[in-house]
Length: 236
Image (tube, rainbow, N blue to C red; front, side, top):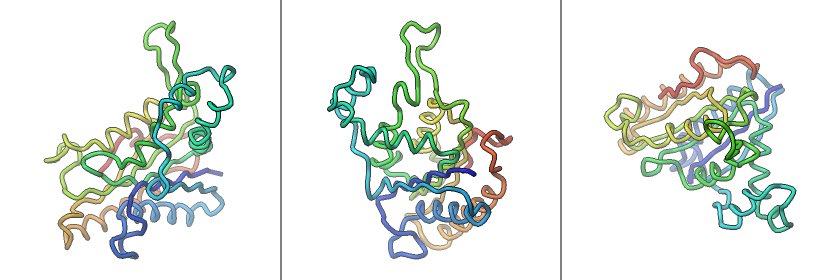
């Protein structure tokens, strides 16, 4: 049985096509999960809405607690890390992470950035040793064979590699860098563009994205131990 962690980061509460002013990224992530459940009805689904209920941003107390060895932590430190621990526990449980992440001002929404800052945890998702030969950092999730699907939306167009706005895309490259740092290299990405333009171009982009999602669900194996030839690539 696969455990799927479904994340939504849009500030918009609804889904486009269903709710007025609904979110395209929520629409895409919901479609992926619905299609996945049709194919794998017994799989476990975890859900977290980072747009409506964003994690607390990292504070000075959080940093102090996170970089204190667990056996030396005082009670207040455990309290400071409680939310982060819950987020990390979910990530560790998940075999497949499906994240709906719209582009806000060329980057990820604040709630998703707070999520990233809470799951990048020394001793839990990455290791650190000053005396280690070579790089003092290493990923701790490498052997868990986790997969990540990033489903996005953009107001403009041409943010794919080689596109007219590729240099301004700090969403998928950022996410890929962070999760690779933790040891998650099997990454797939699909995005809707032309949101600010609307009309036929937006609808065509939505139709294409939904077709790609259906194909991606069909191509991903349920075995977390098997990666595919397209793994570790962002497709937009």
